[in-house]
Length: 201
Length: 201
Image (spheres, each protein chain N blue to C red):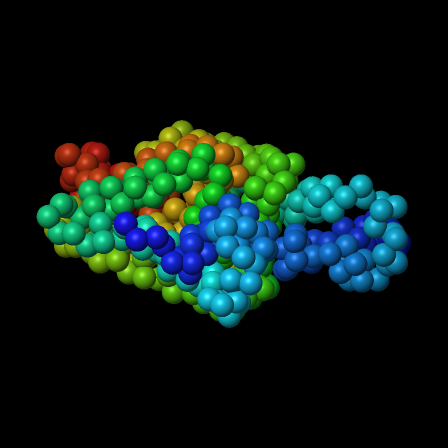
């Protein structure tokens, strides 16, 4: 296997640092120390910490396996649930201490950096549109309990997930993600005897 | 009206600074400059920026009018909705740019400060328990559409609200709060003809 380039090493190190210590808590020297590269290497590859953060977000987005949402062999609600379970395991891997990088950057940097704020907004909008398509598919198939419009529900679920990931980080616990799944199921799962007495979510 | 004490002036200035620029984006000199007090005044009143942040959270909690949730003359679901509408207006007042102070501190400081992380967790837990009591009251009265346990739903709504407030901050828009209210209504409002064909949330 070829060695990763110095640029890749720097992005990987910055991903770890930013995710754990935040943008302002990660100096350029912290990043180059973590990467094991000379401090001067940073400006050979990046204009600024901000432009590096945009690349880190791109790398993070790829790791979130959003293609899970568009694979069509599995019913849409199941695909969405498996996707959130995958994200949940990713948070668990770090003892829930890291949260979601998009949410972290959004909370920390929305006032400080319009570039990062807009990139976070764009990334969340891409995610939400894939979710909306899957929810629309379920709704058309009569396989979604909620009658809320698919696009609204998709945006809401993205926000509810970000809130749950944030509280998981605050409480160092997976319980907020369990709560998310409980309400997710009540919003999505069509009751066995729909139309009878059991239709409430 | 008596002039506010220097201590109160400092807390008010820190509330504004922390909420808009974050904890790490607010130096002690920024706070004393905003308060119009000498820099040395800070350490006459506070041990550290961290202990000041705890007091700022207390002040913020009082401003959130949580007693709205416990007033009993109004039906519980209506009380909860009016409470969230109040919080929504508070976010709107600053062009949605500030977000919720609890969520901001949780996202920015959970790794950096165990003291602040635990205080945010405690404050959210208090809020959630008041919500849970109101939701339980509605559920007992048969006035809640969702069959999800009141305590779970309360925790979920707190997290979903924090996520919506965060996205409002990222997008500088009230649309995420509108989405929250749409799904909130679907989870809470009992359909007129419950038991017939229309029971799904």
